[in-house]
Image 1 (cartoon, rainbow, N blue to C red):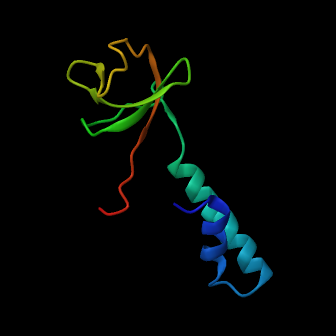
Image 2: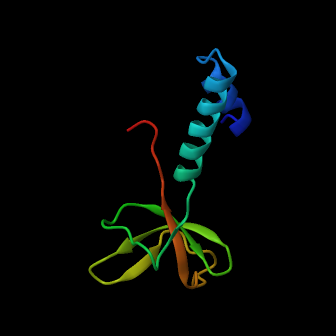
Length: 98
């Protein structure tokens, strides 16, 4: 996987002027930040049972999904049988091949 800086440089190759390069960099960075944004559960919840990344109040991250019908988060891979704790944020897992 490319580092962010490498991806920006590759993306900018199509732009010839410094202004275009700065605009391309700003647009690429904004898109990157959007994709990496954690969504607070107080703001929005997933509307389907797709698999997402979840983060708890201790900044731990796991994979899980939200069952809206039961208003409950399901932890796909519990570690040592321990409860994951309170989910505070989530974000989609993007599949670049779909």
